[in-house]
Length: 365
Ligand SMILES: Cc1cc2nc3c(=O)[nH]c(=O)nc-3n(C[C@H](O)[C@H](O)[C@H](O)COP(=O)(O)O)c2cc1C
Image (tube, rainbow, N blue to C red):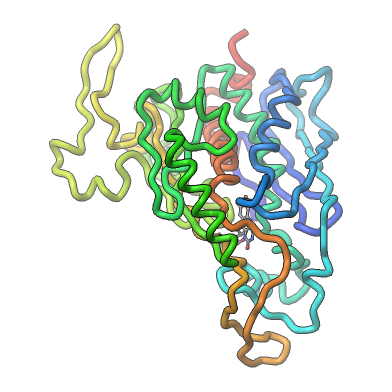
């Protein structure tokens, strides 16, 4: 399924950056999940550009849910959400020659769709499509919360500037979910914003790492081989535009540890298993351990930069120099943090629906 993710709980994404509307269809959602419009709007606001550290294209995201909701709750039938594109400046993309932007999907989109694609503003590949993903992600996050599962993401690193590590996951997640710029250390937040501003001022961009924590996921979720928690989450997370790496727990650095250090020791505590560390990120054998899930994604610097770049002219078949116009994010990490929460929630809902059945996500009766 080309534009659909998930089996038992599936999301389909459609639209283009400068088309009339973008949207998503959520299928397999449990009946009876409350639709919390304040929460959906809050999540959309967190993704929306704001100030000098983001693109100047600010869309109001006036969404409509056209199916699958009755009396304020999901019905269990396909839920379709539509968001109009209201702030387009398509003239920025009107040109006789086609100069694909290095680092963007202009060239690959052309190779796949043979020039029929609507490439204005990045078309179907645009970060704009993460708006409906966040809207349906808010419904998934609400469903998870009913089952005591919470998700939160911080900017672990931006332009090489590190944030502090998670200390007390529950408290840190509560802090992050009330913070617009998702950084745990306020000093690091100031430095990161300065670095993004500096990149913007020089027409350039910066990247970073997002770290997501999931608390309360029951042990036993996931399949041992092809549908491991790692496989399903990475499949979903790699769909976020600009994500170029995914790691769990200690990630690649686990390779530099000795086995005795990499193993997460266990203690019997209050009738259950408690882990003394979490180098394996809450997953063993593809299955959740009951420990917090720790996931990191690498987000590249925004490809659309305003410095001169070398590319090709596909209409003339020759080399070309590109000087971009238009509105672009000087960094993606701070806006993508809520996209990471949403995509993680959608993927977990699929795994949970597979294990316990669709209705489990309706919450305890
Ligand atoms: C929230 C968000 C906002 C983005 N904003 C921009 C942008 O303003 N300009 C741009 O060139 N790319 C932006 N991107 C990234 C591109 O969509 C992405 O790099 C491109 O589609 C190529 O895909 P790839 O980087 O995954 O290979 C954004 C991505 C996200 C998630």
